[in-house]
Length: 355
Image (cartoon, rainbow, N blue to C red):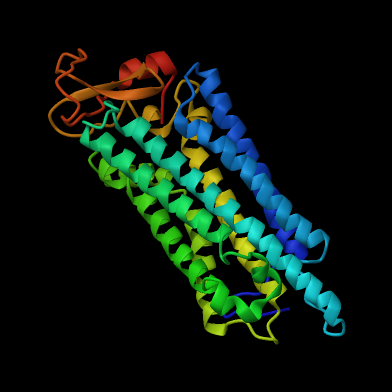
């Protein structure tokens, strides 16, 4: 089996044995996400709807991977005694990669947009551009959308004007195609960076909560589940660095190299979708009357120092709304700091306790 500098190429059994359970978990997570919202009679928000096309596209990515394994185009070493068959297999593997990467870039963007939209829903009251916090999330969504769109088209158009050069004429890649290794390298780096930035976004909001350090870390852990997907992204980045260093030659088993690339892409995006749904599902596990970790912590958290706040169902989300010292809802501006008031007695009586 081909050996990388840090791990072996996954076997067909390993690919099937890891991807199928992850895909099933992602399907269950998306279904439970919608079930939770419907059960609590909450309107579905943008972050919920974005998970649907992401899941559909992950089905497409999984089909491409399994088709490659089923036809022995991926995950199997190339035979050394049949040049014609080897040439056909390599061309087919390149076609599968060409079909896979644009879908992956689009799906990756949808998952990140869902997470940022979720942040905007739970951390902002005024959803207009005039609100600095809302504007921050909107700008982040626009930038991620542009990033995903740019790489989707870059993967779709590596060789212009004749895409067939990419499949059957590697000798002319240097003159008629972009440097595909550098393209993949730049995408892997930017993907990992955006993963980390998305994970870091909620930290300043959560760190202002009036909680012990251990409690804050527990809340951050819920919002940092995407680190699991980022780990897969990091492994793929390491593989890209190794592949760029090694390059492709006549002695390179290109089929196995493409297999590892597509495998870690699929692991990353499936874990990413799963992680994006788990904060919402936490409320369903802990209590019947909460829709997210922020709502489940409403009886003990506070943000800012000037006022208390309550969570009120309004429009398409549960908003954190500022209130005065008597507990009345106020409208003194969306820019003021808001906080979540502690009301354990009422919460214990109405919901039977909350973690």
